[in-house]
Image (cartoon, rainbow, N blue to C red; front, side, top):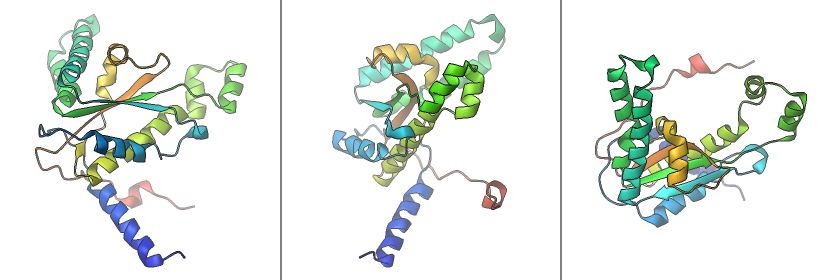
Length: 219
């Protein structure tokens, strides 16, 4: 029998985890037990996803040398960008991006999130028509990345519920080819995000959000 009181309590617990989650960028060195990483991913894979294709793949990196190598891959990618003639005089901006794109390596665990190719019947029809990639993405809005993003959000929420901080990062994807090779990702998998995880070293209150009246309409 469905108990309304129990449902309200469950919703309150969920709301607490969702509202309390914040992006954490400084971590204590305490290791994250693999059993807890497994529990987080177990919840992440319950995410809604296109066609139930479950096109996500995860590699959890708790080895310090491998995390350092991931940072090195991002540094190399940024060094290559800094040499572009179009970015002449942008040293300050590259320095800021480097700090923002590499702090993940200081966490005791980094979850690398990959997306596998996905093609629905609608995608196949658009391909048969020969529409451009830009128009294809406009009409389909990348259901593969939407699905993987849903899983990342659940992972970050689960991490918060277990007392950990996490940060959904896409800046390191600038080094995607090198990271995919370094981690031995399956050939079709493409890096979508890195998520550092650990006990927060600083207070990280949730950031503000726009009022609902600014983002929600009923019609």
